[in-house]
Image (cartoon, rainbow, N blue to C red; front, side, top):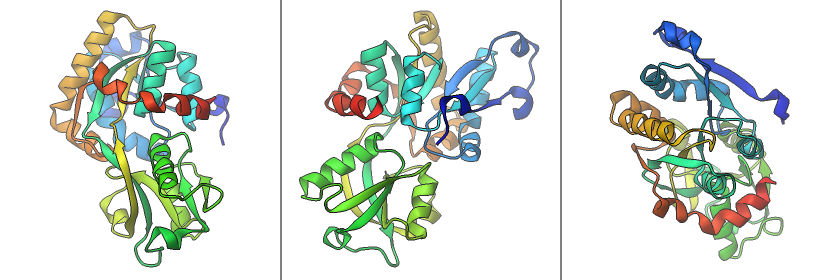
Length: 277
């Protein structure tokens, strides 16, 4: 696992994306944090449409930064090391309540948490799964918390009925199943995994509702700037370029992140904070 000093950083500048503007070199880059759930290559592919649009709209370079895990992400939130961050909803709510970060937009629609196994040789029932291993991206991920909570309600307890191992990405979790290191992995019901990968998997168990990702802004950013960025993000949501970006994440649109929606995450705050500190 990488240390904080080894955070993977890379910038998607307009010269890379095929558009140049003299003002960009004069402005400090905005630090846009990404989810630590995919590889660097995949992050570049997914975020390019959003970064290109945002750079043109704001006339400013965006530095796309990927923390190695959710604990690293939360530490950087506490240190105000991002200007903007695409965050899991439960961490976004914790950042809002504890550190004054402000939610701008939430991805729609919400999803479910799924326990996926090999379609050809995986267990067919939860009872068959006893004694097996689940690969997860991170135990503090909401998709994992929701699944483990649902399994516990069914009488299947971590370290008694099955083991959990952590991996570096969703791709790594899927690979662990393919290689037999684990017999299942946990993922959202849409996005992240392509349809070809899903064709080789089957859903062994599905758990409750999973709110969409949230883009949050640091407390150091002015209210006026927050409003401008929210306006630009909502405008981006209506563009053809946004369809590809959102589809790759498993969503259809951005909506304003209202307090009513954010408050739905409150039941997970205590467990979320405990898992990140």
